[in-house]
Image 1: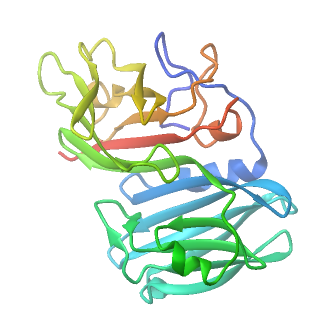
Image 2: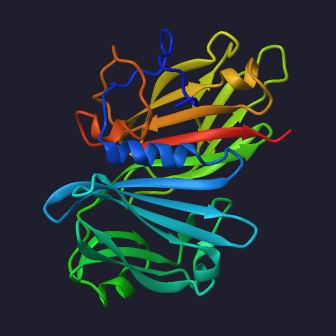
Image 3: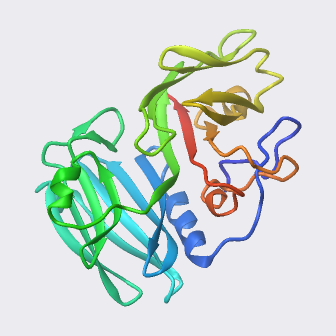
Length: 293
C-alpha cells in the first residue's frame, strides 16, 4: 500500500511480510480505493464459519445522507468476498435483517441501531447490535444489546477482533476511542503533535496520561516503542514523515499492535495482511491522521 513505506529504517516498523489469499487481497483493494477524505472505520474479525476460519470485514461510514455499513465475508468456494451493503436509504429504518450467500448457504445479518449513540466516529459506541448467524447460531456479535440478540439466536460468538482501521482528523490533537481487549475497557486515545515549531515532539496519551513521548521528531519521524495497556504489551509504530516533509495533504500513520511475538528482522506489510501472519493472536489498531489546515 502507498500509505506505508515498504521497509522502515532502524527502529522502524518491522512486521513479517508474506503473501495472502486472493480474498484477503480483494479486501485490501476494496478499502484502498476509499478516498482519504471519507469518514471510514473498518474492523476485521476472525471467526469459525461452516467449519473453517474466515475473516469478516465490517466497514462503518458516514456521508451527508447518514450512517451506513457494509459486511464482507470470505467465500472460500468462490475465492472472493461476499458483500452486503446497507445504504442510508435502507439504513434510515435503523433496524432490519438481510441474507448473505456464503459458500452456497445463507448467512443471516440482523441489526438494530434505533437507539445507537455515535461519537466523532461513524462507528456506533453503544445502544446497538449487529449480528451474523447461521441456522440460529451466532457467528459474529457486535454491540452491547446482547439480551435482545439472544432472543433471536443461540449460543455465543466464537469470533475475535484482529484489526481496526480508522481515519482521524485534527490540527494538533487527534483523538479517538481504543479498545485493546474484546469486551475490555474503552480508552480515550489522544495523539498530540505540533509540527510548526523548531523542535517538534510527539505525545501519545491514554485516558489523559502520557504513555509515550518522542523528542527530536525531525530525526525520529519513524519508529516504534512499547507501552503497557490493560496488562498487555502494546507495540506503537509511527510514521509522521508526511507531516514534516511531505505534502500538506498527506497523513501520518500510527499502529498499535497488542501481539508481542512479531519478528523484528522482517519488513512491514499492509496491516490487513498482518492478522493472518502473526505467531500469536493479537489486535492491531491502525490510525491515519490527517491535518485540518
